[in-house]
Image (cartoon, rainbow, N blue to C red):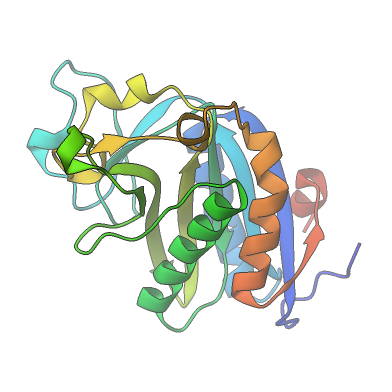
Length: 230
């Protein structure tokens, strides 16, 4: 394992937190890592995980976008609107130093587009919408379908939150909300688009490679227990 020095500009620590991770637990860990990164006590770090089922609302979420049936929602400090996280969805929280938030958000979208291509799925950006999409076919009544979303917070030049890519999650979780506040569109996953089950465990090593490449960094594995000793 590489030494952990905050002044190493090329090191990216990969921390895999596992499955069914409660949102508040991961959020608290993000804040802790963020403080350490700002202080120069950690290298750039990315947390990979699957959450326990949860709806989260970014700062731009409008009141009418919340579930009408009273389903609990966690209000968070990222940008963006309302979304869902849970089993079958790969979530990545890069906690990295950046200088341009717009360019960084585009880079995360590029990472998801590349991951989708690695599994034979054509994903793209859609003007005026965040995230990455599978193109619809209006003549067949098939809407554009969101495959992945980006939500960020940047303070003191270091990021929090990140991206979520649908791999094998149940799309019915999205039926209670308007994902990311965008009406008239669908939600899909790598599994739904390819017709075969593609689980997070299969996607994660590809995502780690693509993210490190996009950030121009050298990844190294860091166990959660070792991270918490810093």
